[in-house]
Structures are given as C-alpha cells and as structure tokens.
Length: 345
Image (cartoon, rainbow, N blue to C red; front, side, top):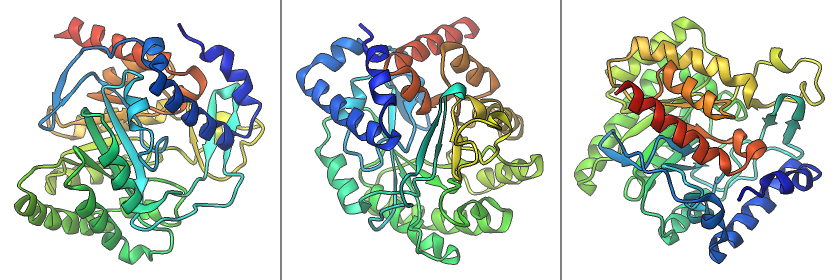
C-alpha cells in the first residue's frame, strides 16, 4: 500500500532539508518494524551482470541521498537493485550555509547547494561495516572544499584507498556544481592527470587487497559535444570501468520565472531529463559497445526509465523522483526496465 501521497503534503510543508532528515529517520523506523518491506513489496528480480558485478535489477539509489551511509538497510528494503552512498570527503565538513535546498514544485524539481556536507571517511566506513545489506554498494568520493583544486588528486586517491576494501564499485564525483572549481576537473588535461593518478593507485590496491573494484566517473549534463568526446576518449584510454551521466545542471531555462529558480546550486528533476539523455546518447555513440553507462537525471515515471534505457543507459539511478513520488517509484521503474529489456532481448 502506497502511503507516501498522504505523507507528502506534511513533508512539503517543512523546510526541504528538515523534511529530508525526518524522512530518513522514518524510513529507518519503518524498516526495523518490518512495515517498509511490506509496503514496498519484494525487490524486482531482474539480475544484470555488469562490470563483473551482479545487480538485482537495473534501478539504483543515486549518491547524495545517504551521504554518510547511515541508511543502507532501509534503502535496500525499498527494492533497489543497487545502492550508491556518499559523496564522502576525506575529512568531515559542514557543507554550504543553510538554506541550501529548495523545491520548485511546479516543475517537480529541486535545487541544492549542499556542498558535500558529510561526516568524513572514518564515519562513512564504520556505517558501511555495520550494514547488513549484501547487494551491490557503490561509494561516491569527492574532495574537501578547502583542498586546493591543484591538489584534488590527493583527496580522491585517499578516498579510493579507504573505500577499496569495502565498496563494490567507486564513483569519482567531479561534476557537482557546489564545490568551487570542481567541474574544472572534467577538462581534458585536468581529467587526464586525475585519471592517471587514480589508475596508478588502482594498480597498487589490486595487489594489496587481491580484489577488483570497478571505478566510474560521474559527469555533468552541462557539457558541449567536444567535451563529451574528450571525456569518452579519456575514459577508454585510462580503462575506467564505467560512467555515470549525469549530475545536476546549472542551467535554468526550464524553470525560469519559478520561485527559487535563481538560487545558486544544482537543479535536478525533470528539467535535467533531456540534457542527461543527450549526454547518455552521445556517450553510447562514442564509447565501445557494452561500455557501462549509468543514467541518472529526471526519472519520475516508468516512461522516463524506459527513455533512459533507450538513450543508451544500462542502469538507472533515482533521487529527486523519490522526493516527489516516494518509494513506489522504485518498483515501477524496475518493472518497466525488466519488461523493456526482455522485449528487445
């Protein structure tokens, strides 16, 4: 039974960040009681083999919702085929000043400028170790705000090193618009240098831990065709295992004139849907066949999930859609993905 439509008006009467925290607390309580699994139903069984991992289905949780990996087990009960937690930075940081999250309800969208607020790697890893979930778990890593951009590789290397023993895959987040100059790391020379450093560290980690951990890069939707082409080339050249497309957008054309539209930060939800799909489709053309692409951005329905797959995504992640639609969206999208992939098999 879907109770979220009854809860949403109450949650939407609160400050968005406060509502976010309350929702996560409520999900934890419901999970402990067993009511969450009963409400969400069983996970859609649609296994997918990708990057040497077995995903329970094609729908995953996007990074950003569970920054400190505190809510892994409740999220697992919502029917996701995989989870991604973070973004985590080496050291704890408060993020940007509040208010830093805004709803644009007519567009079913959000603007956030959280700024990688998190409790740091130590707490992050402790929380993962306590979780009972044994499905595919991704760790999304970033740099601290006070680390100079020219030293960003140091933070990413430390993050990669610390999460390697416990994560099933690692996402290198270089596309948040809310950390100063971070998106500059998507540029050709900067990205080349960063990936070179990370891949050198990967060689050491493979030998030390005798396990393989796929590494992905998460990119922005606000990229020109030449930039997408350059990124695709570097992903292949450095044997990066996959790409996540995309993060939030800084464009405001789709929400011009709406309350909060002028707030700084990344815009998510339906306004990023088409630009995300454009990047996915471009990458699918530029990358080798079967190169893993995780699509994220503006998925609010089963039709949106199908469109992401048709654009070229192998897997899909949700975030803003959960805020507006609730947990029922997970199963809806998973069933749609299952039906589509079976029909074209």
